[in-house]
Image (cartoon, rainbow, N blue to C red; front, top):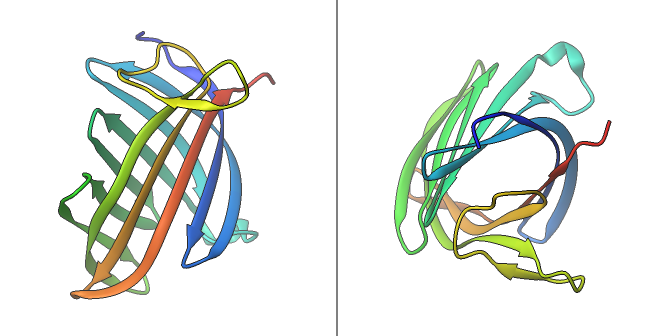
Length: 156
């Protein structure tokens, strides 16, 4: 699959028990052994004057990376069972960070209202990327996260 497909992205984020859901419009495409999801989000929720951030999610079997560019710049890498370093930069602060990933999976619908872990990259929509991790800033644990990124066709 070389062409980009318009998608609706539902991002469910749970941090230390606090849940947030955001919906974005974006695109996804496959390239070699990876899938890419690209979307833009406001730097500050509800404040369009704060600027925007372009996010690129890259998934390949066993690894997920997220690069954000704009008024906030960051890079994060998630590999189950390993600590990976990253960074965060904004006009207000800059720091290095590390992620300890405990779970990373790509889920496909099973046709019965549930889902099943994918053994290979999806050829079609919808699918869900799900991962759990601890984030560390300066060797201090700053939070536990559980993220679900649900990708479905944008029918608009």
